[in-house]
Image (cartoon, rainbow, N blue to C red; front, side, top):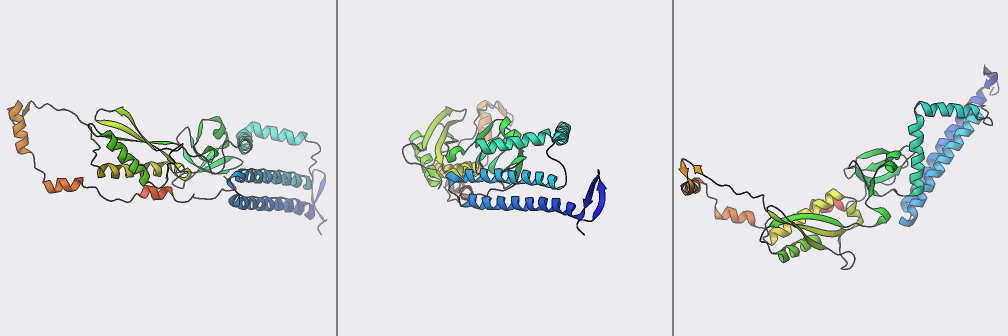
Length: 330
């Protein structure tokens, strides 16, 4: 029954068996490739950081070998003669010319990414257009980037290598971060430094070993209305992967510390000369303005300046675990 001829195609007898075998090989190829991907993903999750990249790359390459081998086996089982590649190469050339060049290019760049290891799964990267997130998969066509808001962005592999790219966690090392802030003119610089260092120590992911990773406070400029400072810190690698939450946590801590020490964060200032007001000139106009201005109670004013205890939500967001484990497909 399996060998009974169903119809003839191109002078070749087509039987039920000749249809079942290619379908079976193709299905088995997909199942095997999926099983290998799951197995290597499990190994990757349990591996040490030094071996994780090699395991991921090996798993992806083995998956591609299985898929291409199964494809050729399926074509061979279907009765096509692969010894002569003239027809196959011609068809492939036409397909590439008609629009597959982008797919082939992205696939080739994906292989280069895996072999070069300039970008690895788990790295936090930033592209030229400002797109930033953690690499969770390097697939055949695109690289999947997961943002801090848990949004997946698929970036074609060609864009990963053709444009400028910042790898914030290259070689799994931390980075020095500059947090700008300003205080009013006339503030004691030593008091500002003490408050900023207290703010840095209040953030749980600040590293300071007193040698290479040293927290510092720099005076960087003289603004129109304020002295401009930078808090220079070395956060943990996990914090570097959460740049928005990390900066918000330091700014929150800085505001608490500056309020605690009575240091003012100034508003923009501008001198205004009043020539006339309420029909009066010069000094008489100023007296009229003070006479009509509402008074603010001392209790309310004093209350507004009292430091308040606050809970730093951004610091808690930085320490949440990575969103997902590395994925098998983009």
